[in-house]
Image (cartoon, rainbow, N blue to C red):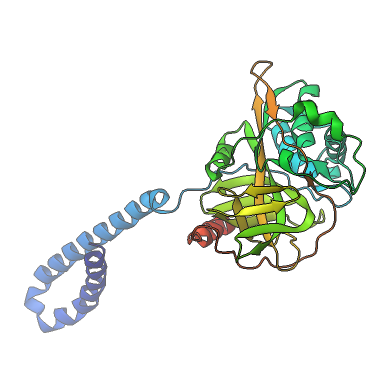
Length: 359
C-alpha cells in the first residue's frame, strides 16, 4: 500500500508536468485532460496526506514505548563521601521531592548538593571511610532514617547471603555485634524484581562487586575486597539505567548498563561458596572497575514508602559484606564469561531511545 501511494504521488507530479505538453499536442482535449489530471492529483494527494497523518498518529504505537524512569532523580557525586550514603541520598531526595519532604534535611537543596542529607545518612548507616558500609547496616540505617523523619516504610535486601561469609577482621569493627539481632536470611534476587522500580513509592539501591572469573572452574573471586553502590533510575529486561556516585559533582554519573543473567557458577568468598544463579553481570558504561575484572550485581535494597502514618514496616538484612571501602581504578570491563545466559541484543535500541528522548 505504501509503495502504491508513493507511485501515485510521483505520477501526480509527473502528470502535472505533462499538462503543458499535452495542451499543445491535443488542444481540443485540453479541458477533458485537465479535469482527469486534476482528479488524479487530488486523489493521490489526499491519500498521501491521509497516510502521513495516520503515520503520525500511529507513531507512539510503532515507536518503542518510553522506558519508565524516575524523572528528576538526583545525580550526586560522592567525592569526599562514600558510595552507599550518596546513592541512598539520590533516592531519598527523590522521594523528598515527590511527597515526602521531611526526608531532606532542612536547608538542603541542589545548590549545596544535599550535603547535610548525605551526612545524616552516613550517620544512620554507620558508614566509614576505612570500612565502607555493612550490608545489614544499610537496611537498618535507611529504615531508621525514614522513621526518624516521621514516615513509614519497608526496606528489603535480596541477594547474596553475606551472613555466611567469614571476613577476616582487617579493620576493627565495633559495630559488628550491634546488628546481629537483625540478621535474617535474605530473599532470592531475580531481575524482574527491579521492575517494581516503576512504582512511584518504590526505589532501589544496587549493590555491586568487582570480581574475576575462572572459566575452568566456573567460579568468581573478589578482584578487590570491597563493593560499590549505585542508584537505580530505570530497569528494563535488556537495559539498566543508574546514577553512579563515583564522579565529581560537575560530571554526570548517568550510566546505561547491559545486564546478563548468570545461569550457574559460584562466588568464592571467605568461608562460603555462594551460588550466583539469577544474579547479573553488568557491562556497558564504565563502572570504575579494576583492570580486567567483571562487575556483578550481587543484590539490591528496595525501599517502599507508605503514605501517611499507615502501613506495615520492617526490613530484611544481611551482614558481613562492606560496600564502598577502598579505591578502584578506571578500566573497561572485560568480556562476559561463559556462565551468563546469551547476551541481550536490543540494549543499543534502548540506549539510542534514551539518548534522543531522555536527554
